[in-house]
Length: 73
Image (cartoon, rainbow, N blue to C red; front, side, top):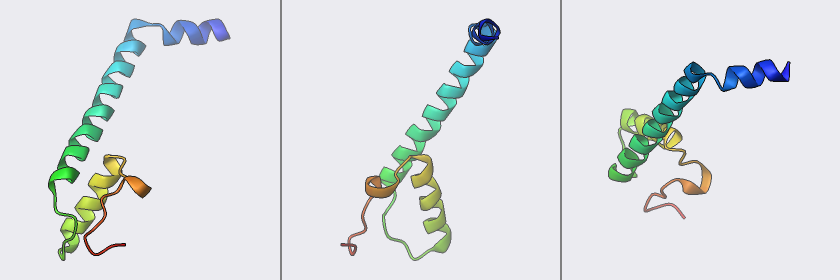
């Protein structure tokens, strides 16, 4: 059973798919991080706040990693 798993994991198609998936995920995180760094932190626009929350999530800016607004303590 373990031999079958190892054989599956080491197949070229699995490795290529895993590489493409990892590249896609890191590209999304990188792009989201760049966009959240460029956007203002405080907006009255609900759509913009929602998009910023989604981008922060995609950029893995969660908890203490989130940018603080100027009025926040």
